Image (cartoon, rainbow, N blue to C red; front, side):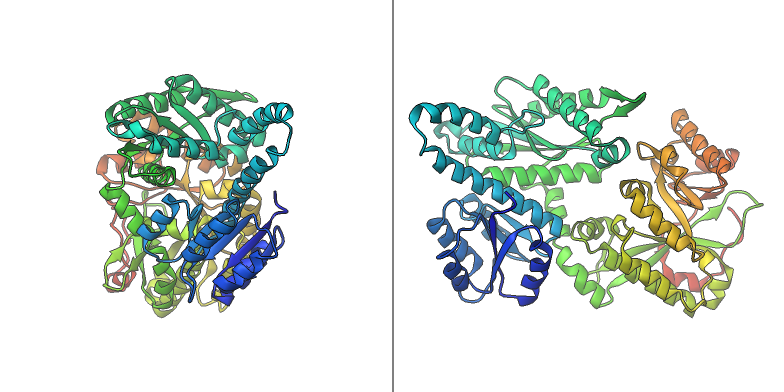
Amino acid sequence: MGSKKILLVDDEVRVLDGYRRGLRRKYKLDTASSGQEALDLLNNNEYAVVIADMRMPGMSGLELLTEIRRLCPDTARIMLTGNADQQTVIDAVNQGKVYRFLTKPCASTTMESAIEEGIQYYQHSKDRHEEMQYNASRARDLARILSHQSLHDPLTGLNNRYSFENQLDRLAEAPEVEGRNHAVCYIDIDHFHVINAAHGPIVGDMVLTHVAATLKEDRREDDLVARLSDDKFTILLSDCNLEQAKQLVEKLQQRLQESTLEHGGQQIKISTSIGLTPVTGNDWSASSILHTAEAACSLAKEHGRNNMHVSDQQDPELKRRMGNMLLTSDISSALEEERFRLYYQTIAPLNPEADQGLRFELLIRMLDREGNIHMPGEFLPAAEYYHLSPKIDRWVIRSAASWLEQHPRQLEKLSSCSINLSGLSLGNQEVLQCISETFASGKIPRNKICFEVTETAAILKIDTALEFIHALKSQGFLFSLDDFGSGYSSFTYLRDLPVDYLKIDGTFVKTMDIDKINRSMVKSIHEIGQAMEIKTIAEFVENEDIRSHLQELKIDFAQGYLIAKPQPLDNLDQIEPESDSK
């Protein structure tokens, strides 16, 4: 399928050049800078997928794709949109004018995934026409084989996305749809990429087939189960009101959580994040319903994973999240217009023998053009998704260094300034170069700068992470491993990672005063850290009982609202750094 021709249409030459460089190595790619130029190319070429920008002078992207639908009905039509009217795009998808749409700026991985789906859609259409050329008897036999292969996932045997959307659309078109209630749930296996990285793809396939078998076994007779892609599944719960659907999904999620797979003497636990959305009336399409269910699943992840979130298109939290995603278009301008702000949160020693110097973690906030503050959870997921997080990291690195150079009194008292790096920054040569150049003057001692990466990000890119960390350690910088204990193979990988601090996952810390198991987890992590001569930091320290337990366990440092709330970095210039551990 990778040999099929692709046509990319955009009136911005810079955009065309960027996608051409990223996609030409894998696909036979033609480009056009206008709708008319694209139609001229269609006269002499057959394209599997046409991707068009929505806003173009003269013929718009929607007009072009509508015409292509008439001329080349087999061609998959994908629309690129920046900040276009969402209702216009949704209407285009629902009316079949557009196969799907992508939001600018579009990551190369997202673009390639959409192209592969489009090629599959195109191939299905072509296959249907070719089948008609066979004689009747052979066509019947062959059609059964091709039909099953084209409508089912080869690994799990479940329906694939194509067949699921077709059946969901047919349900919407059924004359008896009025008065019936249905629901769709969107299921995502938590930390599946970590399982793959830690145990290998064979074990990953075992997890996928196990989840698929559980979904098939627990479904009702008329329910439709499908694997959408990778670790994502969906179920259409037919003739099922929302309350019934919630009960069914909760039982299913509980059963998956209680199941355990064994491989090589190790137990692999499974948890899922699930989005659930009701399907009522006939004013809907498969694309819109799946989009809503997927957004609800994302909200379940934001709430801590192993959760379920129920949303419909009027859900205020869903609208809030969609609004936050629109901040993506504002991130680049916020960088250009200096609308990011640095905050700090104190990290305090828990015993009098520890270094009493100033320690803090740098945090980031974004201002919109009206001056409203946006928290990291509102814009960083979008920045990560659209590969903008390394740019933000570089801004933080340069801004932190500039502030420290301008505040020599605080720099003198500083023991450690922690700077977070996103997973995309690990191994990023521009980030590595930025760090080296920013601290090249030697005005800031490098052993006072501690770069902080999450355990999950480090494990997902273990080889790259090791190379990146070693490169910076050789220059004298320190490293901290954040959210330690949240992964599947924490202790296995810790031996290889040359870190100076372990930040104990706050989910263990915040309830350790009432939960013996979590207290034992904190103790175990600290003992491992001691054995490897790595200092430990407990985050989410929110009351005196937690601090007392941490002091009994001889944890080195604490961070949380009991110690100090995040404050603007400039406030640090107005106070003397604390030298006690209260």
